[in-house]
Length: 252
Image (cartoon, rainbow, N blue to C red):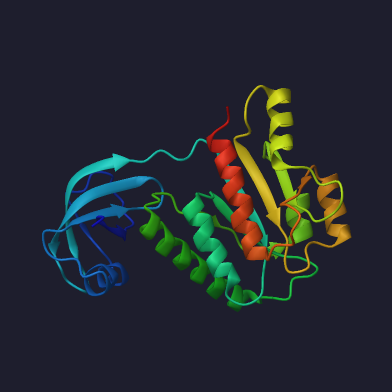
């Protein structure tokens, strides 16, 4: 059985013991049924991990005794997913899968064809829900790094303000979209290295509008095909992140 995992926020780097909050204690003891003496990996979502023993199996304030500390390095590349908001609970699934694949950042976007519009109160609740989804996924897959989830913003504003990336990609159904492999190969040839920071935009149901696609091209985005079939937006996000992370993780 794999070790239990629990999220924690610490002010010191070398604690002798860790007291979990109520939610994490309940999940560890009541849901996962960890018992005194079990190994628990506490992590802070920023690469810090503490290998611990469950000393007190309280459902409200479990106590972990730290055995040793380790620092998990981030991936050698950084992927930001710019995701136009889909309908229903699909964004929750996208956040989970993006966390499992290792995305560093998720930017929820309101595009012209987005059917979901969030006011400030609903946005705060949604972001909190997505953060919870990311945390659950990180526990399950052993990811020591939680993705940053940005505030919901207008797609055009995000496109115009997207700077600091080595490569910017946008999934496209339009004729002339290139393959990911060819674009990465061109980047490597021009720069003698693989890109380290990559932004990938995925559209909503119905894709980005021609105007949004044109704005993206003007901002330096490369239109990328995801194959001959029309994918649901949640499928497109998982597919795009998977093939990109594979290529960046195997740059030779």
